[in-house]
Length: 369
Ligand SMILES: Cc1ncc(COP(=O)(O)O)c(C=O)c1O
Image (tube, rainbow, N blue to C red; front, side, top):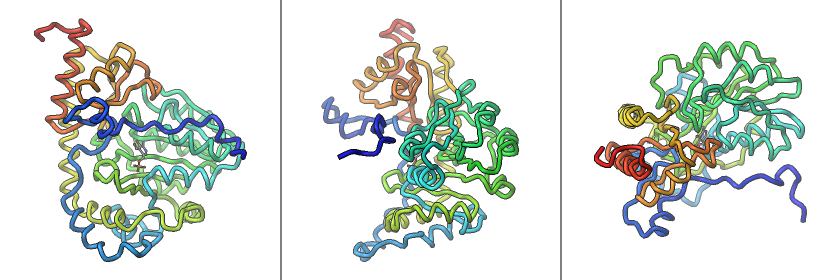
């Protein structure tokens, strides 16, 4: 048996350590997970009753194109439903885009470092990732535009960028799009869109009106708190959506997931609450990081990437023993950094207390600080 050459050497995705696994391994009852940018407040209370209503339909396939969800999303976004495609998480839309637009040998421009699934999707199709270093943790759009050649098919802009949390502005993105040749599809991944409060953040839907070559990705996994259900969506020109539908799995978003997303979408009060709590959490954590003199990138999503000043796994292991799972920058290309997701007020306090103990043990702050 011989698997295809393009997948040789591909690393298997390493997710944040699961809660259950850490509890088992360390024999801890209480563990908090601040590793995968999930919503610490769960999801809207509207979701559970909506799921119960589906109980008599488990034997029926879902509607493949999720028409009701697309319709409601279209209303919410004030967009044409023909511009929307649903995916089994936005992860699946990343895959569909690469599958539909990359021939073997085609180039695809992305930041170095950014969300790793782009590279995996590119490589599976035999495409060539062209990586452009971040500038101060932010996409260097000028250098990315220069990296585009006649062979480029897709450019990825992760905004806010995972793992740095930085954003590119409306003006910068718009100017970037103006520079690109027509044969390039630009993916603007806005998985953390609802968390961003900075006024310079792009109104990407308005850019779509003038730029048929962009597709915007969003998800129900983050602020809507439905990561378990796997629902993401893309918003793009109907022609692009048509191409993606050719490679879409027939029943890619399951029945329960569609109902959960519909119910969650209705509850915008929950979304606003989570956004506000997240800003408070970021303030609380970054105030402490400032006090400790630790560098961090401007955090526009629901996570903060900060420099521990030590090999990241030291802080990671220390926090794990305290029952706190964060993401070590070792695996993310930032070997001295930790990425911590913003939790509830109590979780943030526990994280900061545990981190203060780590700094004390390292002699970086006073024992009675
Ligand atoms: C930037 C970015 N894009 C996409 C995803 C995937 O999200 P989903 O759960 O919708 O597949 C994530 C998840 O962490 C992410 O950080």
